[in-house]
Length: 315
Image 1 (cartoon, one colour):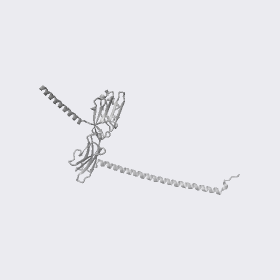
Image 2: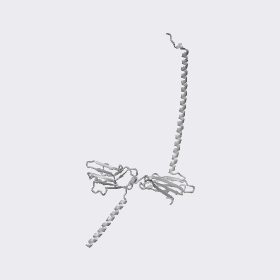
Image 3: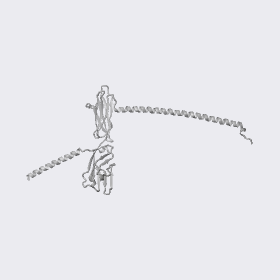
Image 4: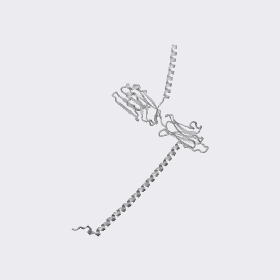
């Protein structure tokens, strides 16, 4: 009896350790779960396949975001289908025939970051556990970085400004000198600001460094969520950055456009003056012709008055 007691105690300890390891493994699995990535403003599909659905005659399912129902659907034996959805969420029309119950969201919102969507089959006896559970992670792409350089005094430091906006989550901004060298410590200042109306981020970086005349500086914006890396590069201290090149090109284009429009206006005014001269000349010619006709009729009337017998005939 004593031996058995020791065996039972050892068995209990072993089971307790096994349960503890299983619980730790589950917690680790939940923490390391990979979420479905959704880009803000774009559609996304939350996968869920449940082949057992094919064996049910009358079945109803619900997609829930946390505790809020976003879609409910039911299928009956007669083929009748009823679907109710919130914010245009949808599932496949033939879900009852294929078991594909993936949830289609028409547009991802930033507020849905790290939200959990769960599918419940209400025809099952056990309603406590969801059939599918999917985590949604949201992200937004940043704009191409705008790099500006301030001219420094001879032998002094040069300041660089790098800006990017409209992304999520907060990105990493770093600098490179000559494509490989990191700037010295204390020369970089980075500020990320979350917009109040959308919670998207605007990031600004400052670099103040003393570099050689032919050195190049690159500003790199890295968004690890979208796996995007955006780079803007400036060549040489006296070289203009990409943004200023674009500004110079726009200035040249605007100047050329103004010149062309000015020439067109001058040509239009000159042509209108030419038409006005032609019209005035035609009016003068018409008036002169009209006066000639009036003189002829007047001379003809005077001749008839002076010779009244010329129009009489003998009876």
